[in-house]
Length: 243
Image 1 (cartoon, rainbow, N blue to C red):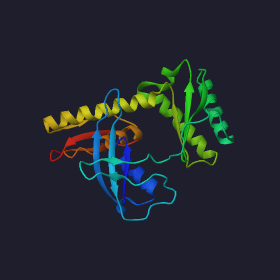
Image 2: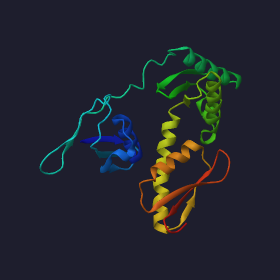
Image 3: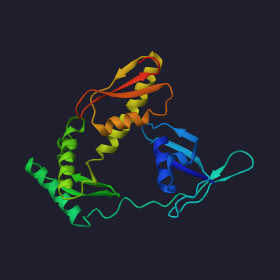
Image 4: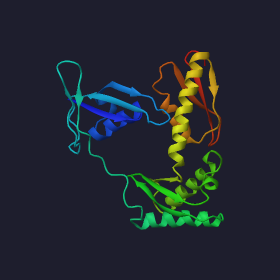
């Protein structure tokens, strides 16, 4: 059977296919139908077609893709996914404790703020901070926000939810930062390909580094690697054969 999936990157689309179909990645072949780089006002977009003769998960609610006899035309109903966004108010004791904990930290820092639930996933909980002092809470390159997020994750672990990752955001900083890093990755990749050399980026946290690696993963003549020690390592982008 043939199925179609979409994602911001090839990896995201393949991971989604494996998750929705209930298959291992070795159980299907992937054909890239469309690749669109992320720009200033649009997100990256990759569309893939999955070929497999294995039985898929009974929980999969999409349907197989259909191809015309002439030029390729693929149609597929979008698979049903669990709704991420809902009531911003805490829905259980754990969410209540997390919002109160983060608000308490902000208050001890000397700033006011209201914390609500941004999104819910099986292993993630997003919390949104509304504050007049958002720029201070974010800090230079998001380091203050990262520190707050680290404390929130430590607290979540002490509440018996070490398997849940807490994501803190304010003023949509995470989205804006992600878009900025994707633009940076493509710009640096172009410079590396022209000069056939390497460029070492500024120190980044694990999430930002992972985003750079993932963004450039599909460019065949460019590779990336992390260098340094500690939490904030640097990513080197280099031309293949010029390491």
